[in-house]
Figure 1 (cartoon, rainbow, N blue to C red):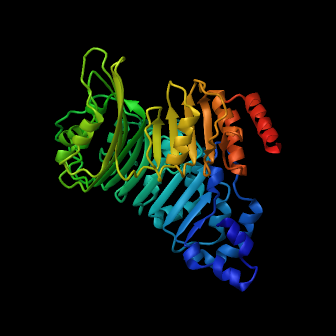
Figure 2 (figure 1 turned 30 degrees about the horizontal axis):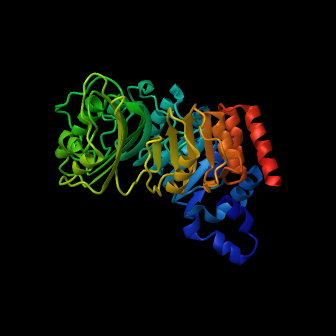
Figure 3 (figure 1 turned 45 degrees about the vertical axis):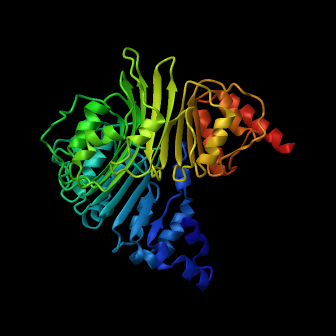
Length: 485
């Protein structure tokens, strides 16, 4: 959008009508999300001269028509100082260092006035990769809740798959961390106990909670607790890590949400001397109490290790049968069983698949088309072969982010006649992968990847996040040689 405004406005009247159309500028995005999604820290994604021209010559002509505004750290001052925005209700602050964002929230009079008097929808993005957390992040969250008197919808650091900054609930102040207007919150926290804190009187008006939990662990929640979250209507819980506390934490928590109308679960569960999670368990353990439930979307993978008890694990047909007659929509399932080790894996998910991510795909994957998935992680102790990557390229046709964790080299090193194709891939993370996977993806004879500047930046990022620099340089040299042939 920025390039359109900069390039077309003031060229002629026809271009002005096109570029300044109210439907087009209603949602004004002054960022480059491709740069933001990169692992590499960028000081700015748009040239200062471009921002200067837009601020001085274009914003005065359109400011009264802007309802939604997305800005970055380096451009917030010129854009907010240029004009006022009387119709603005939605603000997205993207690509901020935490210290700078906190400084703006405390010192920027214009920003504070907007947040206090106008903003009802707020999106925050902080330049932190997954897993990092500090006290400043907690201060930012608390300050926003105290400033925004009209805030109803709040996405806090849950906007990009490569950056989900964790809110450390333990650092939140005991006072001034509440909102009487907030109805929808999207957030990432460290543990499920942090989730319980949000229900403990500080967000009484909350009806929708979308929460990503890094680790699900903690003291048991009483199964028959009298405490109920009566105002909550929509709840989404996802976690990228295995948990052993599904029965002791997740099930009791869900039993307290008796008025839910929509439930979304993405869980990776580890069980010992037990069986798979199936349709009967889901219904009997918590769904039976949710009498208002209209939609249940889920992806639940159960890993079972039966070392001390000889438990007969159900077949895929048994799993499918467990969902019949209990009001479920269409469900897909597949099972991988190791009879020697008495171990099994069972994946169940609702169809159509509505998540834009798929975590911990392994060699037991049996294939199916996932049109919505943009972010995929792969993890296994068995090598990934060329054939699996080819299946993934077909089954995840719009994949943009791929993260591979596998320290074992592929066994089949011969060149395959089938070319792996990922036409939309913009980020490839191999920091926890064997060097041979870099060769598999970066050599033209093995794979086709988009040869844009943005993808090149992602490659450079790999050298900074774990892959051997000289190894990647050699791979790039090989790519050049192959291109010349």
